[in-house]
Length: 153
Ligand code: HEM
Image 1 (cartoon, rainbow, N blue to C red):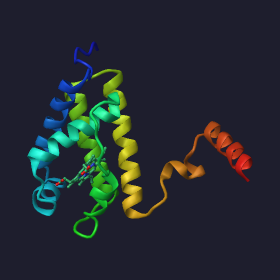
Image 2 (cartoon, rainbow, N blue to C red; image 1 turned 30 degrees about the vertical axis):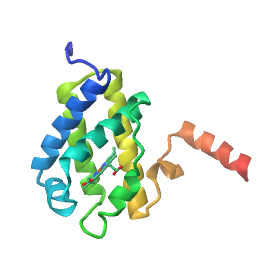
Image 3 (cartoon, protein in one colour; image 1 turned 180 degrees about the vertical axis):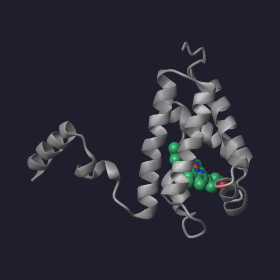
Image 4 (cartoon, rainbow, N blue to C red; image 1 turned 90 degrees about the vertical axis):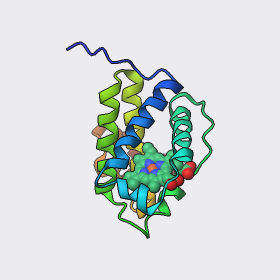
């Protein structure tokens, strides 16, 4: 079917996406209270920070200079920040992107979100990143990984 949704072109679409995503997050039964009650998020500062974050990730502009690992590590003693929470966050993010946008950048932002979720989850829970477990690699990646291991042995 022909998909007539626009792609993400720049700052304007990023603001639309971030606003729509956090509208859903705020109302979400798994994630809402983490922002509203646990972190007591100031949305007037959090939303512009997230525009800058995604603009930096997607377009190398935006000037985001924060520390996402620390921001989430801080939450670990206060609330569950496990795989279930991250998978739920990702599902909500993907659905928001797909409802509004389609194209190369839309696909890219979803992949970036997945990578970031894996990194943040792994770091704050001190588990190895699944992408660095050779068992999870494709045969081609495993071969390259073996060559790399040899070269650094
Ligand atoms: C379980 C999933 C997640 C939860 C519950 C969560 C929650 C939060 C909370 C409560 C904050 C602090 C907001 C405040 O200042 O009050 C935050 C900040 C932030 N989050 Fe998440 N987050 C999750 C996943 C992610 C993912 C996957 C990404 C990236 C793709 C992300 C990117 C960020 C960034 C960039 C910040 C700002 C950090 C800074 O202060 O510079 N979050 N998040």
